[in-house]
Length: 264
Image (cartoon, rainbow, N blue to C red; front, top):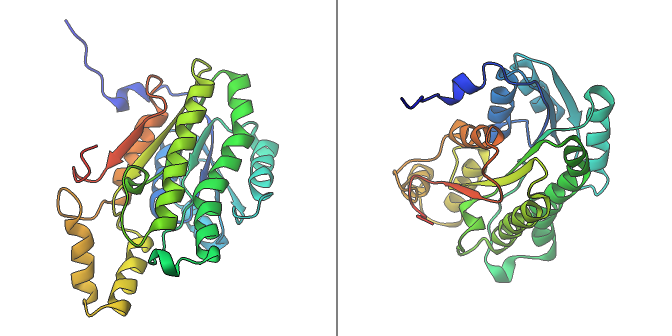
């Protein structure tokens, strides 16, 4: 008879791992930190705002380490990982979640806005992966999950910098997966639609400021762009990340989380 086991059954004797979550102060980052900690892992938390990181850390049931950093600084990824290694040893699970999303028509997308998206959404993830990957390969086990977007898989108006950075992130994931196939390390991306976080709050405020649309109506517009007609809950994305962390046969893939809107 076939035996059916759920993920919770598989995790009852899970080996504690050393994790690093970027953008861990709120939203998806805080949610996945809680899930990893609840599974018995040690979780390093990094973001730019110490108070938010401390709040996340206080809500974790297991060991945590707060490392405040601005990952747009080219040396920050090395410094953050150095600190985690100093306390716990090599990072075995990396969730590259830090990101930014701002909109503007192409003609009004200046170099500053472009560079912000490329540096935080793409280059910061690249540096974190570059710094942690050798230790994972040497140890014969590792999991990397990057937070992409439906914009990693399709284009949209007024978000050229964001879309380019998220397309680049997915390309990075696929290239690293090809390079490390068979090493015991997997790398994947989750690609959510509009998630109910501060990013959407800022987008709603931007729409309301630039148009005649009321904030409530603007939020509803974002919700109806999802296949199920509502914003994505941050923990729905965290659950998908957690799933990929606990799978060894999925590598180089992008998991779309948008209620069926993209159908890619």
